[in-house]
Amino acid sequence: MNKFASIISCLVIFLLMPPQGYAADLNGLVASLKGGGYVIVFRHGATDDSQKDIYPFKFDDMSAQRQLSEKGRTLARELGAALAKLGIPIGEVYTSQLNRAVETGKLLSGKDVSPVDALTDSGAGSASAMANPDGKNAKIGRAVRDLVNAPLKAGVNNVVVTHKTNVADAFGKEFGDIREGEALVYKTSSSGPAVLVTRVQPGEWIAQTGS
Image (cartoon, one colour):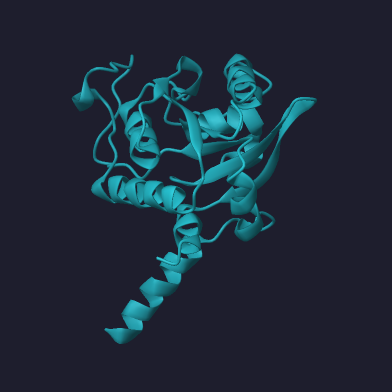
């Protein structure tokens, strides 16, 4: 039993680690985030795979959407508590129109959110849907990038909560491996597009608080 527990613990730690090439220097990043000027793009939290989306989407019908699992809700709350404890100021929160993203945004920010069409699952019901930034999903990708590149209010960071396909539509197929709860952190600029700083797993934010 102890050997089994050790294996599980190692697996959990592995899953919370960032993909190679994006190991976050969070100490320095958190200090910078306290001054604002960033956009944090999250994929929504963990969901209940026994639930399925019904298409076309019915945004006011919770029974017709895949929802956050209890694990997803708990982690979103812990992530929100970590961001608050780290003193990271949050400005606007934009989400998909689907409730799993809306709920993630509310739980991690403690604020009302603004649902946006371009952030809503661009997979559009196809089980094999994957982003095509140069094809039919190009318009969605541009809209997401425009949201990330938009000017911010002074001293805050905006939050975006969306889906895997939308992230890949906007930033490239190499981001199609984004995990539930993972974040891409972008530094905005008045002289050009926002620049990716790093990828951060939810457990890394929480670990920064010493919890």
